[in-house]
Image 1 (cartoon, helix red, strand yellow):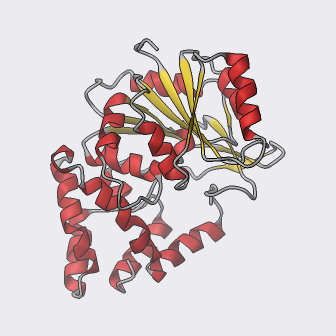
Image 2 (cartoon, helix red, strand yellow; image 1 turned 180 degrees about the vertical axis):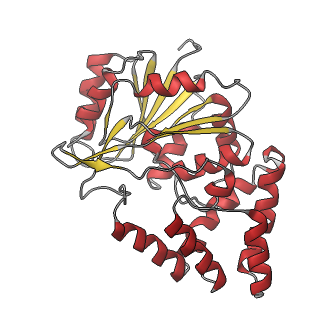
Amino acid sequence: MPEKNDSIAILLCTYNSKVFLAKQLESISQQSHTNWHVWLSDDSSQDNTLEVIESYKRKWGEDKLSVQSGPQQGFSLNYLSLVNNDRIKNEYYAYSDHDDVWLPNKLDRALKWLQTIPKEIPALYCSRTCLIDEDSKEIGFSQLFSRPPSFANAIVQNIAGGNTMVFNNSARNLLQKVDIRGGIVSHDWLTYQVVTACGGKVIYDESPTIYYRQHTGNIIGAKNDWRAYIKRIEMLFRGRFRSSNSSNLKAVQSLGSSLDEKSRIILEHAHLLKSDSIRIRIKELIKLKIYRQTLMENLGMVAAIIIRRF
């Protein structure tokens, strides 16, 4: 397909997605920005997902929908299989879950900001979400973040779901360089980390751009109530965060010379937050200035570092 300055490749992954997929595809077709192409990777669905996909392929035509088989190694590596597919050549890329509903201006809002960033600078757009239940009833909003995006935040927290993310080709090129052979926690957190670690630009749009569906089949939900706050802090105290993020950080370190100086220092010193010496742990925490987005989570992080659970 010819490359155009505002073309967006929508990277959509499916697995047993027949229940909600059609609603998501319909919301994509109703985007006010029409220069898009859906690249869909199915991870061997066992339901009627492929029938839904084929019906839209006939409806839209091959110039709007392409399909590939996923690697069957989990949802994150399925998304990265699309990122690393050299057949896909666009100016911009958008992750898409199979069970959400996009607001009609989602791509337009992302594109208007992304086009203000020089092409050679990695750039990532993400946003807040409106939460809906299985019956598409609105049930609230995702957490509102106010602190600026940065690698000092990305090293300990992902601020947005991949279902809201749109990024430019410079960011995609960085993701293609990442060594993921050691595994990763999640493709969206990795995307936030990679862009910020390499001096890129990130915007968190406070206006929701999608309806984020919450249901029993969610692999990762919004986690936006007091119980979720407590659970995240509990994870810090149990040391689960330390093991869950180490693979992502190893992947980011593989970018070597692409990392900016500030991020390189954070990566080189992060292990000292686990030092036997409490004096060193506190010193490095103050020097690195890492942070989470809320006061409660920051207090939990500091306490976890002090008692060596980070």
